[in-house]
Length: 419
Ligand code: HAM
Image (tube, rainbow, N blue to C red; front, side):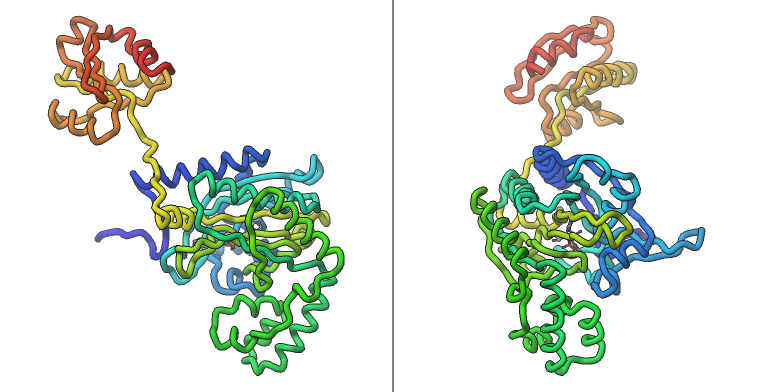
């Protein structure tokens, strides 16, 4: 029997895994530079957390969750997104009783039982940040700037930032009534109408063409924004302009999860086809209260790492294979294998990347391997080196050889690399 990975999962192996690692590092670096700290939450949580947090009317909760009963009869779900778990953890661990805003970031796998296609997977990777506890338009702009800066550092250029405001409770209530009475006249099927009654905004991300054409002239949230929502949105836009972050306002942008309020945004890449949103996020001012915590506001984003890699590829950005080997040690006699490994371990202790030619590859085969591996130095050890305690270090860039005493190999590498 031949095993295959489950349908629709993304996986990364060498050399592409170096790119994956590089992208994560750049994202984390951008979050750390803005004083966000790592949070690591479990990959599975109580199903109820997502049902309540993400919303009973969303596609994610109704169709896409990987839910199972654990051995204790509890309903468990593999996390489809990160925000609900982060807020649960902040409440449970009392982080919201300390300095505000709580600023955290996370990276890891997420799970949605979607129909797989390019850029849409059942297990995918997200990097996300959340800033909880402060309602300040400058923070909204900061969150957007963290993603923008990270994308720029990665060399990504061909994307747009779309923003919208979903307003506050007052805005939403007024808009809800207007939208529902509009939808009642649209001749929608019973199921769609029932869903709309729970959360009419969901109609905007209904993917069916016939629904979208029926709601072309539906009332938009932007027409109902309260004075304070309008002012906050204006402030956010002003901050973005000052930071020279280009954006467009898309007043049909509602996002697919129920917890959003106020500022929402998406980074849309221009060369990715159907699955083009590389990052999405916004404010979720009622979520903490919904999950049993204080009534504190929050804002954050989730950034698709898989899609970011596809976007980089589509722009032809050359991603570097970060893996290199400082020294590759080749034993050419059975007795020198032990010495080769010992020297490699010493080099590793000294902070160098060292590898050994294992098995019976012979000198020629081993040199070929060294060439393929981006190796800086090669050292061949045999019986002569054991008896003399010295060897010849070959620099691969120009082929030059240097005599070294094996006891001071690490020092020699330090001299050469100034590390
Ligand atoms: P989301 O829009 O559902 O938001 O997901 C964020 C990003 O994850 C998407 O823009 C996309 O790049 C990536 N993504 C989502 N689903 C898939 C999939 N099936 N395959 C590949 N990539 C995917 C959230 O998850 C929110 N928690 C974001 C957030 C954080 N809002 C506030 N804080």
